[in-house]
Image (cartoon, rainbow, N blue to C red; front, side):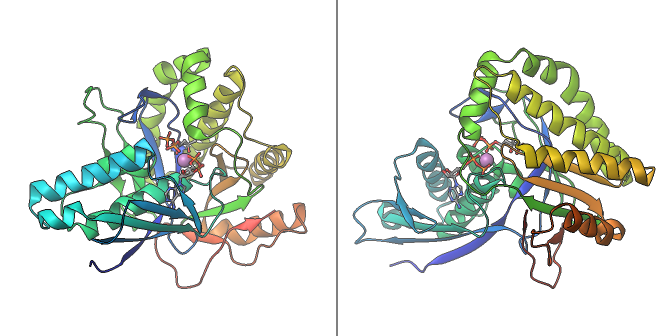
Length: 344
Ligand code: ADP
Ligand code: DP6
Ligand code: CO
């Protein structure tokens, strides 16, 4: 019987969005992406794994509900971890034969555009690697679960290089700067809707690849330059440049979603109100103080500097009087207080 291994993993929110695959099985993207990994104090996945000779089959429970383990993504992750364990001779042959049970919970809305697949698969492969005593880097295995998960394996600011190889060997995530590089940087999560999205990210980006002309333009003419510029802004801690690119990229990503046929509508009236309010606030401030970005869902992630947090919290309270902004800011590194997202 194996011990039960439990690990937690963070979400990451992209500032240059990944949207579109060139290979659906290996999960190879059409473009580079850039993200910040948020502190696990605010949102995280928590996954326990265990292997036993008496288990009849592999099993997974997600947020308390049994799900099928026969998903190609789960199968690929488990197979690759076991292949590494076999190559590294880290566990016995017998142990590799035992079936595994997985139990995972997210402490934030699942499949609602808050990167649950990123935290979830980063967590799963990290837990499995620990169970099978795999020592090598597991980011590329997390990618087989969900593309964005390869970035959640690292802290701070992370780039996922699209790569060009057909086997995916150069489609890897690398750290741009660690979590101590820009300690003033904060992220504020505004939950505008916590229900499961109608179109998953996987399906949404498939439709975009098949039908959107704008996606082609974005990949060829916009993302490469933006990626270089935002990396430069991160390295120089140039907030206004960082924020401008972040907002433009979020807007273009949602324009691609609308350009898809049938269109994918992820943002709601509340999301658009958040975007409007942030632009007005920046205009009145005379410089860019806050950036919004929306993943494939209605919820906003605001990036802002610590000094501006109190005023932005007052603003959110004013616009959304029934929201619960108690403590809801996170840095990119550990803070002592317990933090949670705001429900608008
Ligand atoms: P999100 O915007 O939350 O990332 P996605 O559509 O990309 O939404 O992916 C949601 C899917 O990710 C879920 O339906 C589930 O299959 C998977 N997922 C989410 N959380 C976990 C988890 N903790 N462990 C394993 N898989 C997870
Ligand atoms: C909008 O990584 O969830 O959050 O690879 O099909 O699992 P799959 O998709 P996923 O897509 C994330 C899309 C995004 C942007 C991003 O995180 O870069
Ligand atoms: Co996702």
